[in-house]
Length: 295
Image (cartoon, rainbow, N blue to C red; front, side, top):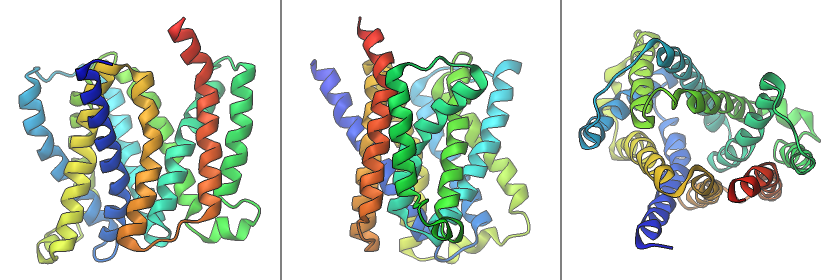
Protein backbone atom coordinates (compact mmCIF):
# COMPACT_ATOMS: atom_id res chain seq x y z
CA UNK A 1 0.00 0.00 0.00
CA UNK A 2 1.42 3.39 -1.01
CA UNK A 3 1.68 6.35 1.34
CA UNK A 4 -1.15 8.06 -0.56
CA UNK A 5 -3.41 5.04 -0.15
CA UNK A 6 -2.58 4.87 3.57
CA UNK A 7 -3.43 8.56 3.91
CA UNK A 8 -6.82 8.10 2.24
CA UNK A 9 -7.52 5.05 4.39
CA UNK A 10 -6.93 7.15 7.51
CA UNK A 11 -9.07 9.96 6.10
CA UNK A 12 -11.86 7.51 5.27
CA UNK A 13 -11.81 6.18 8.83
CA UNK A 14 -12.15 9.79 10.02
CA UNK A 15 -15.08 10.33 7.62
CA UNK A 16 -16.86 7.23 8.97
CA UNK A 17 -16.28 8.48 12.51
CA UNK A 18 -17.82 11.84 11.59
CA UNK A 19 -20.80 10.16 9.89
CA UNK A 20 -21.35 7.90 12.89
CA UNK A 21 -21.29 10.82 15.32
CA UNK A 22 -23.90 12.62 13.23
CA UNK A 23 -26.65 10.45 14.69
CA UNK A 24 -25.78 11.55 18.21
CA UNK A 25 -25.74 15.18 17.03
CA UNK A 26 -29.18 14.76 15.44
CA UNK A 27 -30.55 13.30 18.67
CA UNK A 28 -29.33 16.36 20.60
CA UNK A 29 -31.02 18.66 18.07
CA UNK A 30 -34.40 16.99 18.61
CA UNK A 31 -34.50 18.17 22.24
CA UNK A 32 -35.24 21.86 21.70
CA UNK A 33 -36.64 22.98 18.33
CA UNK A 34 -39.25 21.69 15.85
CA UNK A 35 -38.26 19.45 12.97
CA UNK A 36 -38.82 21.95 10.14
CA UNK A 37 -36.49 24.49 11.74
CA UNK A 38 -33.68 21.95 12.20
CA UNK A 39 -34.01 20.62 8.65
CA UNK A 40 -33.82 24.08 7.08
CA UNK A 41 -30.73 25.16 9.04
CA UNK A 42 -29.00 21.84 8.45
CA UNK A 43 -29.27 22.18 4.65
CA UNK A 44 -28.56 25.93 4.70
CA UNK A 45 -25.32 25.58 6.69
CA UNK A 46 -24.33 22.56 4.64
CA UNK A 47 -24.74 24.61 1.43
CA UNK A 48 -22.51 27.37 2.80
CA UNK A 49 -19.91 24.83 3.94
CA UNK A 50 -19.64 23.49 0.39
CA UNK A 51 -18.51 26.87 -0.99
CA UNK A 52 -14.85 26.60 0.08
CA UNK A 53 -14.84 22.98 -1.15
CA UNK A 54 -16.07 24.14 -4.56
CA UNK A 55 -13.42 26.87 -4.65
CA UNK A 56 -10.72 24.30 -3.80
CA UNK A 57 -12.06 21.90 -6.45
CA UNK A 58 -11.76 24.62 -9.13
CA UNK A 59 -14.22 23.01 -11.52
CA UNK A 60 -16.92 25.18 -13.12
CA UNK A 61 -20.45 24.48 -11.97
CA UNK A 62 -22.74 23.23 -14.71
CA UNK A 63 -26.09 21.50 -14.93
CA UNK A 64 -28.13 20.08 -17.82
CA UNK A 65 -31.61 18.63 -18.27
CA UNK A 66 -30.42 15.08 -17.62
CA UNK A 67 -28.79 15.93 -14.29
CA UNK A 68 -31.57 18.31 -13.22
CA UNK A 69 -34.12 15.52 -12.87
CA UNK A 70 -31.74 13.59 -10.63
CA UNK A 71 -31.00 16.67 -8.50
CA UNK A 72 -34.68 17.47 -7.95
CA UNK A 73 -35.61 13.85 -7.21
CA UNK A 74 -32.69 13.38 -4.81
CA UNK A 75 -33.50 16.65 -3.04
CA UNK A 76 -37.04 15.49 -2.33
CA UNK A 77 -35.79 12.10 -1.11
CA UNK A 78 -33.14 13.78 1.06
CA UNK A 79 -35.76 15.95 2.76
CA UNK A 80 -38.01 12.93 3.27
CA UNK A 81 -35.01 11.07 4.71
CA UNK A 82 -34.28 13.91 7.13
CA UNK A 83 -37.93 14.03 8.26
CA UNK A 84 -38.03 10.28 8.85
CA UNK A 85 -34.63 10.15 10.57
CA UNK A 86 -35.54 13.12 12.79
CA UNK A 87 -38.74 11.41 13.93
CA UNK A 88 -36.98 8.08 14.36
CA UNK A 89 -34.19 9.54 16.48
CA UNK A 90 -36.60 11.76 18.43
CA UNK A 91 -38.68 8.78 19.58
CA UNK A 92 -35.97 6.13 19.48
CA UNK A 93 -32.24 5.56 19.91
CA UNK A 94 -29.59 7.24 17.76
CA UNK A 95 -27.31 4.20 17.83
CA UNK A 96 -30.08 1.80 16.82
CA UNK A 97 -31.12 4.09 13.97
CA UNK A 98 -27.61 4.22 12.55
CA UNK A 99 -27.28 0.42 12.57
CA UNK A 100 -30.69 -0.14 10.97
CA UNK A 101 -30.21 2.45 8.24
CA UNK A 102 -26.55 1.73 7.45
CA UNK A 103 -26.98 -2.04 7.35
CA UNK A 104 -30.36 -2.21 5.60
CA UNK A 105 -29.85 0.54 2.99
CA UNK A 106 -27.45 -1.54 0.82
CA UNK A 107 -29.90 -4.45 1.01
CA UNK A 108 -32.80 -2.22 -0.01
CA UNK A 109 -30.71 -0.81 -2.86
CA UNK A 110 -30.01 -4.31 -4.12
CA UNK A 111 -33.69 -5.31 -3.83
CA UNK A 112 -34.80 -2.23 -5.75
CA UNK A 113 -32.28 -3.01 -8.49
CA UNK A 114 -33.64 -6.57 -8.70
CA UNK A 115 -37.31 -5.51 -8.69
CA UNK A 116 -37.19 -2.48 -11.00
CA UNK A 117 -34.07 -3.00 -13.12
CA UNK A 118 -34.18 -6.82 -13.38
CA UNK A 119 -30.70 -7.27 -11.97
CA UNK A 120 -29.59 -10.93 -12.12
CA UNK A 121 -29.11 -12.64 -8.75
CA UNK A 122 -26.36 -15.20 -8.13
CA UNK A 123 -26.48 -18.06 -5.61
CA UNK A 124 -24.14 -16.16 -3.31
CA UNK A 125 -26.41 -13.12 -3.47
CA UNK A 126 -29.42 -15.27 -2.55
CA UNK A 127 -27.49 -16.29 0.58
CA UNK A 128 -26.88 -12.60 1.25
CA UNK A 129 -30.55 -11.78 0.82
CA UNK A 130 -31.53 -14.51 3.28
CA UNK A 131 -29.01 -13.25 5.85
CA UNK A 132 -30.20 -9.70 5.25
CA UNK A 133 -33.83 -10.58 5.85
CA UNK A 134 -32.87 -12.52 8.98
CA UNK A 135 -30.70 -9.69 10.30
CA UNK A 136 -33.33 -7.11 9.45
CA UNK A 137 -36.06 -9.02 11.26
CA UNK A 138 -33.87 -9.22 14.36
CA UNK A 139 -32.89 -5.55 14.55
CA UNK A 140 -36.45 -4.44 13.69
CA UNK A 141 -37.83 -6.86 16.33
CA UNK A 142 -40.43 -8.26 13.93
CA UNK A 143 -41.09 -11.09 16.38
CA UNK A 144 -43.10 -8.51 18.34
CA UNK A 145 -45.04 -6.32 15.89
CA UNK A 146 -46.25 -4.05 18.70
CA UNK A 147 -42.64 -2.90 19.22
CA UNK A 148 -42.29 -2.23 15.50
CA UNK A 149 -45.51 -0.26 14.99
CA UNK A 150 -45.40 1.63 18.31
CA UNK A 151 -41.69 2.45 18.24
CA UNK A 152 -39.26 4.23 15.95
CA UNK A 153 -38.15 1.23 13.87
CA UNK A 154 -40.75 1.98 11.20
CA UNK A 155 -39.18 5.41 10.64
CA UNK A 156 -35.70 3.87 10.43
CA UNK A 157 -36.89 1.25 7.92
CA UNK A 158 -38.41 4.03 5.81
CA UNK A 159 -35.05 5.84 6.00
CA UNK A 160 -33.28 2.76 4.64
CA UNK A 161 -35.71 2.58 1.71
CA UNK A 162 -35.42 6.30 0.98
CA UNK A 163 -31.63 6.19 1.10
CA UNK A 164 -31.64 3.24 -1.29
CA UNK A 165 -33.50 5.50 -3.73
CA UNK A 166 -30.96 8.28 -3.17
CA UNK A 167 -28.12 5.81 -3.84
CA UNK A 168 -29.59 4.62 -7.14
CA UNK A 169 -30.21 8.18 -8.31
CA UNK A 170 -26.67 9.21 -7.33
CA UNK A 171 -25.14 6.35 -9.32
CA UNK A 172 -26.91 7.57 -12.43
CA UNK A 173 -26.35 11.26 -11.78
CA UNK A 174 -22.58 10.84 -11.43
CA UNK A 175 -22.43 10.07 -15.16
CA UNK A 176 -23.45 13.69 -15.79
CA UNK A 177 -22.14 15.60 -12.73
CA UNK A 178 -19.12 15.65 -10.46
CA UNK A 179 -20.14 14.07 -7.10
CA UNK A 180 -19.25 17.21 -5.12
CA UNK A 181 -21.27 19.40 -7.48
CA UNK A 182 -24.15 16.94 -7.23
CA UNK A 183 -24.13 17.07 -3.40
CA UNK A 184 -23.96 20.88 -3.47
CA UNK A 185 -26.91 21.21 -5.85
CA UNK A 186 -29.00 18.82 -3.76
CA UNK A 187 -28.19 20.80 -0.63
CA UNK A 188 -29.17 24.13 -2.25
CA UNK A 189 -32.45 22.81 -3.68
CA UNK A 190 -33.28 21.13 -0.36
CA UNK A 191 -32.57 24.43 1.44
CA UNK A 192 -35.06 26.30 -0.76
CA UNK A 193 -37.73 23.62 -0.41
CA UNK A 194 -37.15 23.37 3.35
CA UNK A 195 -37.45 27.17 3.66
CA UNK A 196 -40.97 27.16 2.22
CA UNK A 197 -41.81 24.13 4.35
CA UNK A 198 -40.57 25.95 7.49
CA UNK A 199 -41.77 29.42 6.47
CA UNK A 200 -44.29 29.65 9.32
CA UNK A 201 -41.83 28.31 11.87
CA UNK A 202 -39.66 30.57 13.97
CA UNK A 203 -36.39 30.09 12.08
CA UNK A 204 -34.65 32.70 14.21
CA UNK A 205 -35.18 30.56 17.31
CA UNK A 206 -31.83 28.90 16.69
CA UNK A 207 -30.03 32.08 17.81
CA UNK A 208 -31.53 31.72 21.28
CA UNK A 209 -30.08 28.22 21.71
CA UNK A 210 -27.08 27.31 23.82
CA UNK A 211 -23.60 26.01 23.07
CA UNK A 212 -24.55 22.31 23.00
CA UNK A 213 -27.21 22.94 20.34
CA UNK A 214 -24.86 24.89 18.07
CA UNK A 215 -22.04 22.35 18.42
CA UNK A 216 -24.48 19.61 17.38
CA UNK A 217 -25.90 21.64 14.47
CA UNK A 218 -22.50 22.71 13.09
CA UNK A 219 -21.14 19.20 13.56
CA UNK A 220 -24.06 17.64 11.68
CA UNK A 221 -24.02 20.13 8.80
CA UNK A 222 -20.27 20.71 8.35
CA UNK A 223 -18.28 17.81 9.80
CA UNK A 224 -20.88 15.04 9.54
CA UNK A 225 -21.99 16.01 6.03
CA UNK A 226 -19.81 18.38 4.00
CA UNK A 227 -16.36 17.26 5.21
CA UNK A 228 -17.19 13.55 5.48
CA UNK A 229 -18.87 13.53 2.05
CA UNK A 230 -15.93 15.33 0.42
CA UNK A 231 -13.43 12.85 1.90
CA UNK A 232 -15.58 9.91 0.78
CA UNK A 233 -15.78 11.09 -2.83
CA UNK A 234 -12.07 11.97 -2.95
CA UNK A 235 -11.15 8.54 -1.61
CA UNK A 236 -13.46 6.83 -4.11
CA UNK A 237 -11.42 8.32 -6.92
CA UNK A 238 -8.11 7.15 -5.40
CA UNK A 239 -8.99 3.77 -3.86
CA UNK A 240 -11.95 2.66 -5.98
CA UNK A 241 -15.62 2.51 -5.05
CA UNK A 242 -15.51 -1.10 -3.80
CA UNK A 243 -12.76 -0.56 -1.23
CA UNK A 244 -14.18 2.82 -0.23
CA UNK A 245 -17.65 1.38 0.33
CA UNK A 246 -16.23 -1.30 2.65
CA UNK A 247 -15.37 1.46 5.15
CA UNK A 248 -19.12 2.08 5.56
CA UNK A 249 -19.20 -0.85 7.97
CA UNK A 250 -17.40 1.38 10.47
CA UNK A 251 -20.29 3.89 10.60
CA UNK A 252 -22.64 1.90 12.89
CA UNK A 253 -19.71 0.98 15.17
CA UNK A 254 -18.78 4.64 15.66
CA UNK A 255 -22.46 5.61 15.93
CA UNK A 256 -23.12 3.08 18.69
CA UNK A 257 -20.00 4.18 20.57
CA UNK A 258 -20.81 7.90 20.32
CA UNK A 259 -24.43 7.31 21.40
CA UNK A 260 -23.15 5.29 24.36
CA UNK A 261 -20.54 7.88 25.34
CA UNK A 262 -22.56 11.10 24.89
CA UNK A 263 -26.18 9.99 25.26
CA UNK A 264 -25.82 7.06 27.64
CA UNK A 265 -27.63 4.70 25.26
CA UNK A 266 -27.24 1.03 26.15
CA UNK A 267 -25.70 -1.36 23.62
CA UNK A 268 -28.69 -3.58 22.76
CA UNK A 269 -27.93 -7.20 21.93
CA UNK A 270 -30.55 -7.55 19.16
CA UNK A 271 -29.13 -4.47 17.41
CA UNK A 272 -25.58 -5.83 17.51
CA UNK A 273 -26.55 -9.36 16.35
CA UNK A 274 -28.96 -8.17 13.65
CA UNK A 275 -26.54 -5.51 12.46
CA UNK A 276 -23.72 -8.05 12.16
CA UNK A 277 -25.90 -10.41 10.09
CA UNK A 278 -27.02 -7.57 7.83
CA UNK A 279 -23.43 -6.44 7.24
CA UNK A 280 -22.46 -10.04 6.49
CA UNK A 281 -25.33 -10.10 4.00
CA UNK A 282 -23.94 -7.04 2.21
CA UNK A 283 -20.57 -8.81 1.96
CA UNK A 284 -22.15 -11.84 0.27
CA UNK A 285 -24.22 -9.67 -2.06
CA UNK A 286 -21.09 -7.78 -3.17
CA UNK A 287 -18.81 -10.86 -3.19
CA UNK A 288 -19.63 -11.88 -6.78
CA UNK A 289 -19.10 -8.32 -8.06
CA UNK A 290 -15.83 -7.95 -6.19
CA UNK A 291 -14.43 -11.27 -7.40
CA UNK A 292 -15.23 -10.35 -11.01
CA UNK A 293 -13.67 -6.92 -10.53
CA UNK A 294 -10.35 -8.42 -9.45
CA UNK A 295 -10.19 -11.12 -12.11
